[in-house]
Image (tube, rainbow, N blue to C red):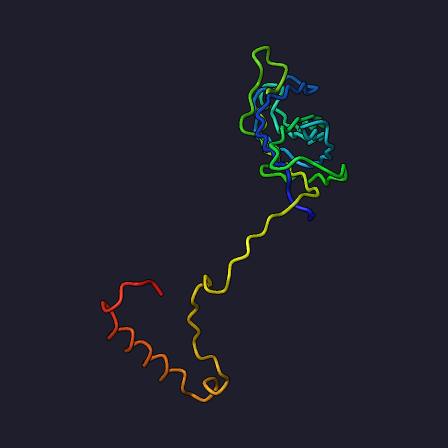
Length: 185
């Protein structure tokens, strides 16, 4: 028995976030998403990720005469379906969630009513479950071992001004042998 990844899952999410600033916006000058945090737990054959991020919108209002930045924290809950390679045996699994794409604004619009922002946010998460599993190791007899070519790496060839001579001789030998043997290496 050893510990290994026994299940994986991946989820890419694109969602619209509706935000209402204190002033009716005239235009959006910029939008960014920061401060992403999350935690995860295993629920059946899923990983449930609960997190939050802050959306900041820089906008003009009062007929483009003033600008402000509106910030709001946005919570989320994602369920990542797991694909198992091996069933858990111990009940002591470790959950690992890696962020492939932090929440990111892909589009920012003013709603038709003119009072809200509609922010499109994308994110991508990968989950792994590490648990105890059995490993099968194949052992081959020595006669199946690959041949290795080793260069002479003795210390007598280094630091004595002969590196250039050896390199040149190797280069000439390769040039002579070119076309004689089509095997790689």
